[in-house]
Image 1: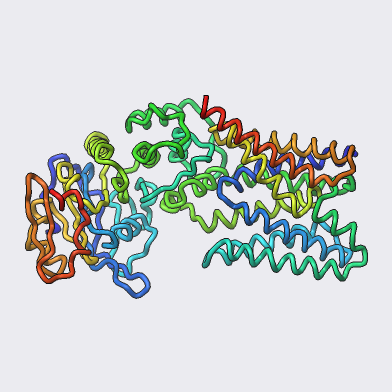
Image 2: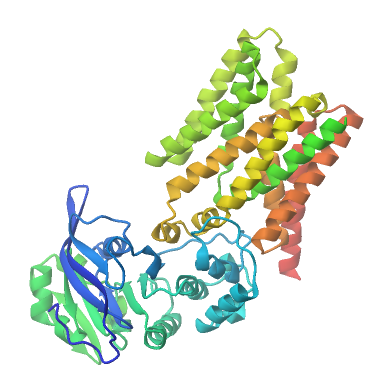
Length: 280
Length: 258
């Protein structure tokens, strides 16, 4: 399953995750997770809450040391990867009283990790303006970032992550807490960024359906294990049953996917929480 | 009297700059606890007949390191509260051993700007410059770590190191400001002006300048009022600081409504 056919826009592989296992406080969170991400590819990291998605992203960022296995950015020497990864964490809380405009937060993305006071310049301003336009956030560039809506803040955070020109962009549950309209817009925006700027995108989500039209590759996580490939290869009854360790049914209804736990299993909690899809 | 104005001006600039980050990071509780550590240090120095500024510096640094160190593994507020209590207890013990009891405790707790001698200005100015230089040096990573700590971590800016660095800056700022406005009320100078500044602007550098401006007006007005009325300067600093915050909130509400 790990050797998926490369999508047409692939310009080579950028990220290699090899046999990564993580245990936290004696509990195994990830078990031998292996997958590849290609340049400009859109990868959906799908799994229910608590499946280990955030831990996997932390391993990729170098914030969590795996017990076994390794993660490599293939354009970088080993051990150096922070700088070429953009990151949008889950649930960023921005204080509405904080004196900071959307453009100030984006500018912090340029060189926020460096010491010293940032000297304003035309080049900085132009870079910020360009990035704000790229995520369609130019309309609220001068608004206080803490007062923006969830979808608007998400755009600003994406611009913040992209302005340092990373090769890989990781987003942790960016679609949670967004209404369907905003969700569609963010997904479309990210798809465009991946294709046009050749940035590999890895996006974690607990709902699979909104991402079906855009994913080049899916990494499906359940019970700490992962299966990767194209959606058609992975989201199948036999693959997911093997992953969950018990029988699940994959049902296609009107172009949507429904993953249903087998009878007699208490597997409900393992199934991606996808209320919209259950109703359908 | 000139000494008073000079030193109060230094204090206002430091409090305005450092206070901006105190408010941004939600570090109001450490900003209250560290001066109390400083108070204990000053009391101890007084007892030993040592330089008060040294006592202030050593103990506020100890308080900062203690809060940063203990807070790393547990809840920050608990570590801060414990540091506060230990320092206050030490301060009480030192003072009870000291012969010159009342005027000393009074000026340490509530400030005594008019008693500043010209020999104190030089060390205070140097420490003040160090403080400002440290904030300028730390500006970007401190801002990133304060606003989006998870992203900062991912970019290699460790939140615990930034916290420790900031607490040390806070300790230095405290050392400078406690003798002037007092341990109990320095807090108001670090919170009132920067909190008020946030209501008037959306730009971080402008908010810092505004915070300094409001702190300057607060301190100058407090000195003048204290001199005229013979009331403690701390009272005026606290009152004017809170008043500026109220004006800021009023302004923000009015702007939203307009």
